[in-house]
Length: 258
Image 1 (cartoon, rainbow, N blue to C red):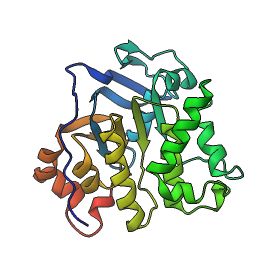
Image 2 (image 1 turned 60 degrees about the horizontal axis):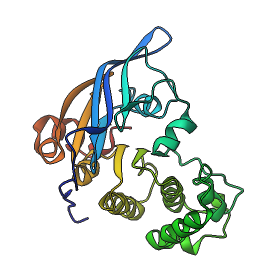
Image 3 (image 1 turned 90 degrees about the horizontal axis):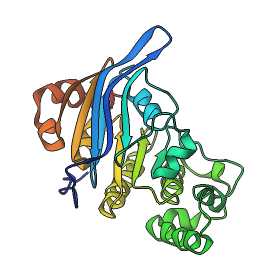
């Protein structure tokens, strides 16, 4: 697979679009995060890496309002999202591509895509966006009247991405977007993430394949048992010996994070 190099983030602002500041969270008596600090700036792809039970998926839950931290701040576009429900957060401009995609299997692909625009009342614009999604995702267009449950894993992932874009988000959160996909669809999905970002949508992704995630990202964070232990520009992390040893060295090590 040819190497991908992330281009500089377009129109990057000094102020973060998404900011998690001094987050401490718990599952019962067990602390999941310790003073977690993460930023996603406008136009960036930011990858969150880490092993099993590192707290990556819990971080996504906090961003989407599915879990409330014990302390700390979560700000999107300069305003706090703490106390908002998940639908309210989505209406603020955050889209979600969850782990395992979570489509409605008995509904058609078209119906699944329209579910992504459920909070919108501008029907003409929704129809225009649907056509735009079918241009961006030709394979989805070919399956538009199929039941979503009959699609392959890679096709379902594309539907989940298109569904999130139907809400016109400023930021998309992606939880393990290449998990369980064939190498062919891994390449396609990562290329689509880069294309989505090039259109001005910021991306915050948890990804099991550290090498590929950092090749398309602008910035990366490494999470270990609830603490950020390493962060920086993605190119620098790719060259960091600690990253190579933990994720990129040895057979299958690039897929050790989940």
